[in-house]
Length: 505
Image 1 (cartoon, helix red, strand yellow):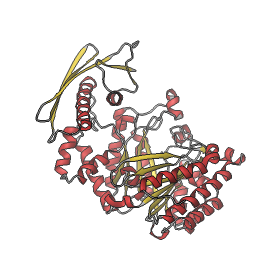
Image 2 (tube, rainbow, N blue to C red):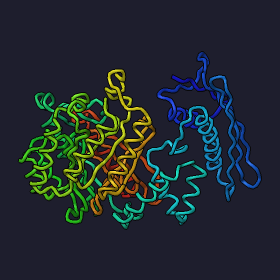
Image 3 (cartoon, rainbow, N blue to C red):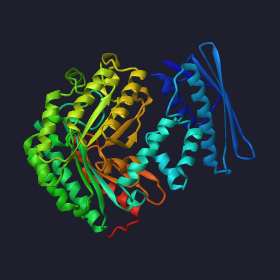
Image 4 (tube, helix red, strand yellow):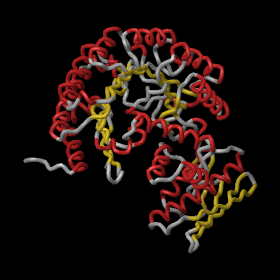
């Protein structure tokens, strides 16, 4: 563990960024408090000239050495007080990043970016009418991104605009997320709302939850109809939405089609069937009945020992069998997920997973990098799980880039997470024309996503200002069952405020 001392007082948001940057280099970093002895000490100086040039310099003391850095950036305008503050924070971030790179010999290809959605930054500059060359310059100089990462962002943005030509005005519509909080078991790396379905079914919670969800869909459908709202996409997530029985799925989809307006113009319907052990011919028949052919069948790994270690109760062969079962049942757009850095997996195991994927050629492949989420079992018991080091993780991600290009896949969305292995990223690849609209709109935050069900988050996006606010449904089934009616009302009030709709008395 490293203890970082910043030897001057800075606002909390500055300190938070410094902490995030330090964590890019060391597994666990703490900001020094009075009683702590630091092993990293940073000092910064900065000023801004009349020509709007921000100058910053600083040092990092570590391991008996002093590392120095200098940064300057000229801006065209004076900027608001908030913009000036951001410029200073960015400059000091450069200093800290550079000195830590000198100390460790580790080069951070994402530069000073620690946020989740780097593609949003590219879109921001694109919408400000900057050319690709101007965007490249800003990302390289102001944020220190590598050529490879800038090129990746450019390719993704190009694909997104091809997939959704009206991306910049799709905020006039909404998308819907419906959360089903049940799984056969909970995976060791998971922090999503996922509760063992059998124990909850015995206690009557599954049926009661679904009763509440039907009411929520009906009331939200009434609001959407009253205001003539168009729906871009509907995404059933969780948990594992195919954990419930075929007749329960059938009733749920019927309620959705009866309640939502303009269902004929919904561009995309997706149901996560991520756990192969939940897929049956009866459930596939229900999906086909309602015109849903976009699903996920997620292996995560093609090594049985890994699946056991992370708490997944299906086998590799079951994944393969269920994929072909879904394909024969008419599922024409199947996504598969692989995770880089799972316990005891290295380059050889990942190569094996890619080779198995090549035999099926799903329409899309999402390559995740393992993230140590605070609430996961894996994070709480790290000593039990031996995972890949940074260099191995980077090599695996590089191989994913190569393999997808070799097999005709293109990257179309990307997001990052805190505490992600090797400071890498999660990338969604697809064959041309098979991109997920929902994944794009939620990652780029270009429209309101209305969340229904357990653990669902409603993301309220003001299409004019870009301001984003959120409303969260309860995560636990018991809490949802007790409070869903109150949650519906609060959500409708928030939507009315967002769109300026008057409430009739």
